[in-house]
Length: 241
Image (cartoon, rainbow, N blue to C red; front, side, top):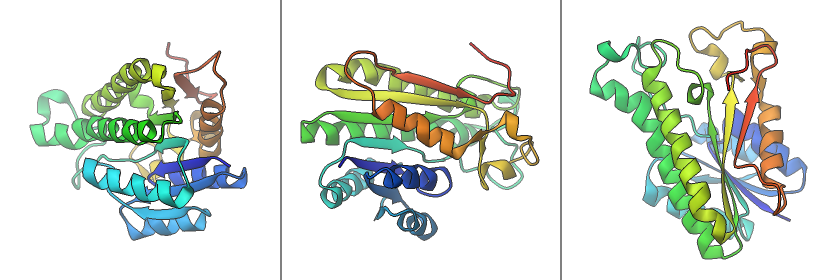
């Protein structure tokens, strides 16, 4: 029975945990808040406190999760890290009008968390010696850059670059680093309350269960034909190559 760890266990993270638990996986959710830890337990997973943005905290949390699960085969980063201030436009606002602290909240926060995930996740899988899979989830901002969201997009594009580099660096060690690019808002209580997303028709959003199924596909591939980047695009959205 394989072991899964999800960073972030509320909303999308909880759906991923439920999906894999239902298929017989051992699972753990790493999160900071009591609400997110409760969601991990409700999904049938082990709840482990930790901060995915801090290397030391994540390292300790992954170690506890590995002990509880008797090994880890798959680690998924589903953490949402943007921390806008009240009244701040979604995405950080126009580049020319933004301050450096806005960039750090919207852009650097995303790329730094991806870096911590990839580096600490790879170290844990290396120590086990059995390989494994790392899946970084990136949003539509990694593919589309609308006006006013350049700060947000820069973080997702940097995360994509980190995954693509890690995929090449780690593949010889039996560790697969994969990017799951979700090119649409994910239909959840959290995301669909964001400005401009409330009341969106279902054909321009992606359901959380489809994201979980895509992760299962990435984790279940054999050694010959392997996907290192997979894109989910909502049926009602124009394709962006």
